[in-house]
Image (cartoon, rainbow, N blue to C red; front, side, top):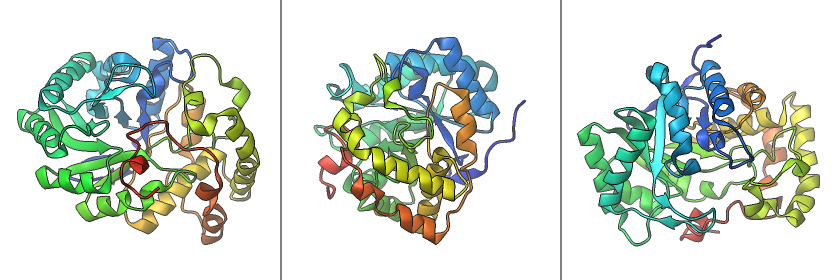
Length: 335
C-alpha cells in the first residue's frame, strides 16, 4: 500500500523534498552483496512508505544504482524528487580521483540521464570539489545544464564554507550534502553557517553513522565486500573503544522511548531546527525493515535534557568519519 509522502521540506532555490530521503548507494554491494531485484524492492518500499527523495551518484556501483532506479522511474517518475552526482571517478574507495572540468560535467550528465532513462534530474551535485578546477568554472558548467533543461537545481557535496559562497555567486545552490549526525558534527563550525547565509538547505548523508547508531548493528556481521572497514571509525580498535559509547547512546534512546535510528533522526531534526537550517537526511539500506525503523524519527523534537545528554558524543567518539582526502575538515575547515 502506498503511503502519503512524508512532510515536505523546502531546501533552497525552490527545491522541495520530503523530510527524509533515501540514499541509493545501498542499492549496490557497498555493505555486502545485494541482487538487483532485492535492491529495487527495498527502494520501492521506501517510496511506497512516503520517502519521495532519492539520492544517487554515477559512481555508485559504477552506474548500477542509477540503472536500478531507472526501473522504478519507468512508472513512477512523478513520485520521485531525483538527485544524482558527478565528480568522483575511477579506482576503489579511498583511491579515487576527482574531476570537475566543464567538459566532464556535460559528459557525465548525459551518461547519468541515459542510465536513469529520464530527461532530467531534479538535483545535480558536484560530488567532490576538484582542487585543480576553480569551483566557479564547474558550477558555471552545471548552470548550463539548468538552462538546457537537463537539471532543475544544483548541489555540492563535502564543499567548504568558502566554496559554498563562491558557488552561490555563480548560481543558487539548493543543497549542500555532507555527513552530519550526533557523532559527526564538524560541519556545524563553518559549513552550516555558510549554508544558512546563502539560503542553502542541508542533505545529511550517513545520519546513522553507517548503521552504527542503529539497534541491530553488529560488527561481526560486517562481511567480505562491506566498505565500512575502510573508514577509520570502523577499524577494530575504534569499534572496541566506542562500544561503551554506543551502549550509552542506546540507553538514552530507550529513555526517550525511541529506537537508536529514531533517536538519530530526532536529534538531527531538533538540532537543525535550533540552528535554523532545513534538512533532509538520506539514510540507506538494503533492508525494508530498516526503512520502517527510520520513519518513527521523522518530526520528533527532543527535549532539552536529552539533547544535553547527547551533546558531547561527537567529541568522545574515536576514529575519523572518513578516509577521504577531500573531506571538508581536511580542506581548510577547522578540524
